[in-house]
Length: 125
Image (tube, rainbow, N blue to C red; front, side):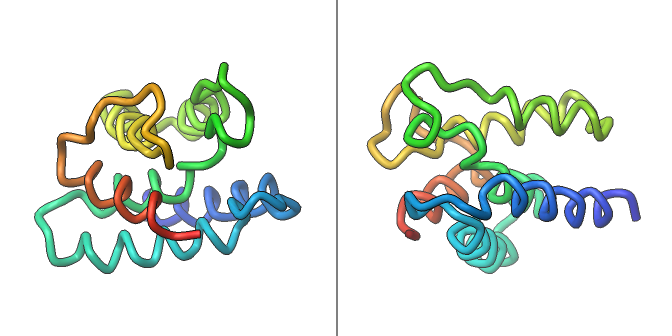
């Protein structure tokens, strides 16, 4: 299935980028967020693919790691390179926008997809 391959490829991509991170946002943080988000998501009516992809990508462009002028450049490029449908990509990016430890420059999450990843991402270090 194409989605399963994309999840595996995304895992490899994120591991490569964050493998030397020393801020607490390394691969193991991503893995903890992913596992807990999926555990919660399975009992909710949400899109597991969106939750998992957002959990995997949520710190690639985080302002805490790349500065105040962060954007979702790497996440967007990754999704585009892998031909993720724009409506799906937009949903993934919307979830990522909501993940912020201090809540800086983000709106409150509205969808259940967003609430799960945002809550887990903000709680797990």
